[in-house]
Image (cartoon, rainbow, N blue to C red):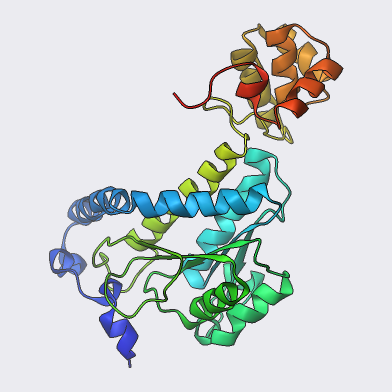
Length: 303
């Protein structure tokens, strides 16, 4: 039997536009999914101010040596773990800088751990395991906005004085008073209660922005190039070379040589190319610019 909170959740209500999805043609089913997904972008757009505040919170934590921590159960938890796991290879940051926690632990990434999301104390315990502190920012992800595991974690984080963000998809119900609420009202799902659909897509979009924008503000991106990428495989080696070619404005053979001299540091290689200096001088210039490539190159800030 559904509890009172779930009855209030918009994600649990039936979508009148897909009421007979079980008996339409495959093409019409595809069309229904697409039509419903078209509403996601407007719902996310309506939350842009809150997303900006959350991104600034995340950046502020990371800039002072804290962490960005995502926590959720089920689909929400998996989305947080996914976004966190993509940050090290994309932005060249340590694996403990952005952390994703899912109720039930790593096993829950593949298998449902029944009851884990209902354990309100579990969220607090999992934060304690990583020594969560007031220097960190916590993003609680829960489509309904009321998952006990996530609420417990948010309460604990707030008690420590850390910044808290609640990311949900439910304009109804009594929601936790986080420092910032990102409530993406995507409406009822194609399949009632299946929050891996529109709600999941919306949350993935928001998490992409929070992590990416905070990393951009940390200087991990130059123009729109990932200049701190770690070339750990052939695809990324090709990408690194292309980035140095484009940002350094040099041909591929020169970019290869600069990367070797820079010991794989894209920013150093680019400074070498643009300012015609050796690796040591380039490193010094980059350090004085606090790792911000546009500053190292003497370019302007906000445009």
